[in-house]
Length: 462
Ligand code: SAM
Ligand code: SF4
Image 1 (cartoon, rainbow, N blue to C red):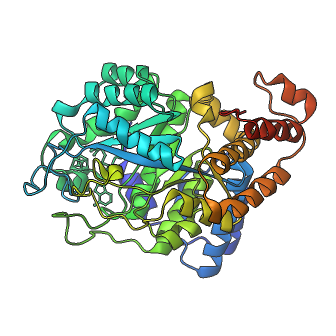
Image 2 (image 1 turned 30 degrees about the vertical axis):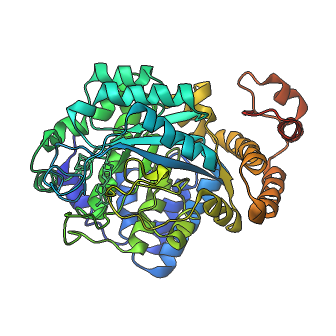
Image 3 (image 1 turned 90 degrees about the vertical axis):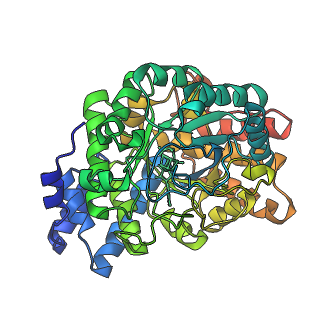
């Protein structure tokens, strides 16, 4: 993977497209096959409010065609805040000597996962600082223990870059997505922001997704920490990264995250390249149109009302109820990595997604049935994921209703299930070994499964 700085610098200074150019780019994007860097650069140059409106509308529509109305919900679980790196923006950096350091024991990690399970979560993303004392064995041990001792259905990992053999071990422990953010693809800024520790090595970090794919991770998650450098450069570089993975391995990045720099204890005083809400919305919409198969993840770094906007223009995943300190879900008060901006519970986030006319989903199916890597990319690009997503959202929302939802939200969630069911096209085209669906019609089978859930069965999916 090589980042062509000269080309991306040039493209990030692209001029705003005229109306006919915009029309033709949006027409191309609506086919759902993605966009090239030149087209993405043009879209990122839009300033005019009407044109921005057209961009957001196109992205929202494509999202619904690819994934239906579903918005997937998950929670991060911070294992350890020990870190030997010097990332200038992060509360966990080694130079922040005043902060209390804490690494959960494996039992404590399990207890955190159980606390999340009790809220209704089915997927968790493990997060750590970088310290060899809490490296691969520790992280893989936590992944295994959480599967063994809790009802979590999928465990994803955001962990520092490793060599291929270590990534193979992490995969063998059952990790779903391997996620690591490049922070900035702009080499000079990267070097400025990462003055010490192993993370200093730009190339080792940039190449980790290739190693992850070689190690058997079909699904990898990329992202740039927006605000460190020009958002246009880093957005285009993220798209270039995904295009590289597609060209080399046949799979686009499974997720692209959009972390925007937040205040952190002893972190940077100023955001070097601040980007506005409209600019972040533009990034989301351009990612959606450029890499239609990618999940776009909006974290609690963003406020509740703003996240409601993002899910209408292409974001597909929300973290919820997040604590960014180890032990946070059991009430520990250690320092957070950065301050979060949306403190709502899972139940409140579920409710607000429903209020936006969308469908909250706790689905974890694809990772568990092997619909990953190039298979997932191909299906999403061919428009074949929408039915799976919609059907599984309905089923997992029903489980949530039965097992976790408390009075205030029950009626709204029930209505959302009905509305979600109505939208399922009754063609019975979900196959992949589910022959009964092929024969009987999808909606009918979903209704039967909803009944089975009522009768006490759990974990039904397509
Ligand atoms: N330590 C590992 C690493 O750096 O790859 C794992 C993840 S780190 C705990 C998670 C992510 O948080 C980082 O990759 C970075 O993008 C983000 N982050 C760090 N400081 C932040 C801040 N002040 N505001 C927003 N996001 C931040
Ligand atoms: Fe450590 Fe990650 Fe924070 Fe950098 S971003 S200081 S590597 S925890």
